[in-house]
Length: 100
View 1 (tube, rainbow, N blue to C red):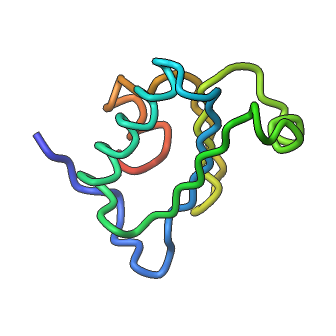
View 2: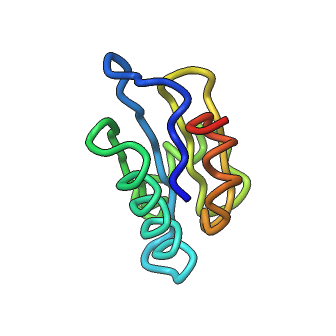
């Protein structure tokens, strides 16, 4: 069952960072799971930057990552961080404040 987003945030584009480690199975799963959620709940109202920590370690240090893959929602506030492959869709949606 498709849930309705908390609000129609037409003026607030979601911005996410997804930290991965190359083409590992968890990294691929997290990317696919995020895209599925975004397609269903966010449409075109989001920006996603995928960061491979093997190529950009400094950014990983800046965000003090403790595991991978890690999704960080930067906008709209509050910032939220999720660790893992994002396979538990309902949990992900609630943590990111996309649904109630």
